[in-house]
Length: 62
Image 1 (cartoon, rainbow, N blue to C red):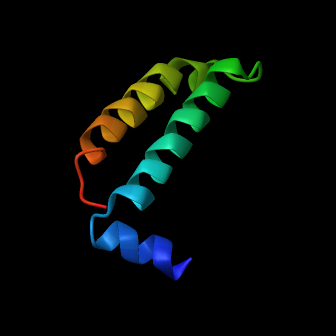
Image 2 (cartoon, helix red, strand yellow):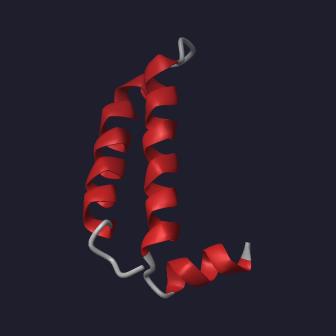
């Protein structure tokens, strides 16, 4: 856990890519849930933010 937090603070690719992937997965889950329209409404924005974040952090150093 401390390696993950250290990777985030030092702007390392692995930790930020993992965070972006989790954000994309959360957005997909929000898209597929049948309970509330608010989660469905924001799912595209969450997926888009995760995708843009993944594109940006793929340029970070290892």
